Length: 317
Image (cartoon, rainbow, N blue to C red; front, side, top):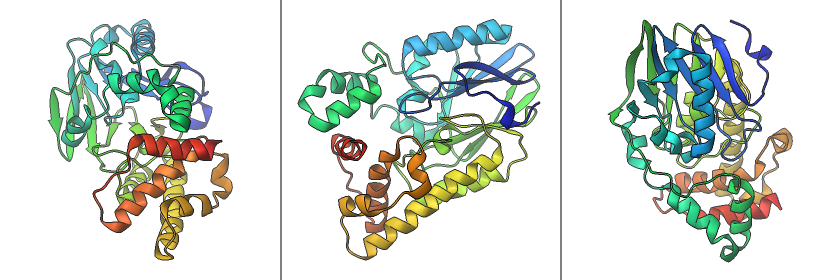
């Protein structure tokens, strides 16, 4: 097995080791997520599906070409409830679909039809609509049927894929309510879902942020060689450090401005991103500061999603 530095960040299926694969989608921006396959002795486990059916079909075809074990996938694990990791579930027929209980409860909150409607009415949404069209216009959401998990768990769960043990570890709420790491001990690989964005800005829909920081530290402490993030190039376990450092920086910067009485908007525009401004999708700071202020306030009130996209659009512009 090679070092993570040797993996080329190119679209398609990449063999990580004996029966273990990563499916990558550069550039890793909005909706362009990664997935994975763990196979052994004719059995297979798929880690996540993709944002629409065409993308998921292409991925599954590449996996079938790579290994006979992908002809009939026995288990599908959704690392979390965001559509770019689960909208393609309907194409994995007959598989047991596994997710954390918190993730399963969240999965229907943003169905594909909602995104389809937003895109079709984008002209009525101003800045938010133009931004949504720009980032999601390449995907086809109409006609996708939501397929929910058939098995849920809390905490940790160990599955068998042939003779391989695959450990599922719930580390959410963080990015979303029920984020899960998928660890294949035999392959020395972890699939992190959106706990890791490599070379891209993390987005914190849920929090608390300290849970996410601890999840990054947990990845750093794993005995693995290869780390497949939810978005971005393959890395190693030390790749989690950059994400952790960003989260620490944003947390501390937002707290200073919260304590000084700045509004969410004022704080968002006042925080200097420095080196992090070179990361893709830097506008996500608008969501991150909004979520942090909600955490600092101890409030359950959530900013409407269209408003959050409007704030990001203004920053992007």
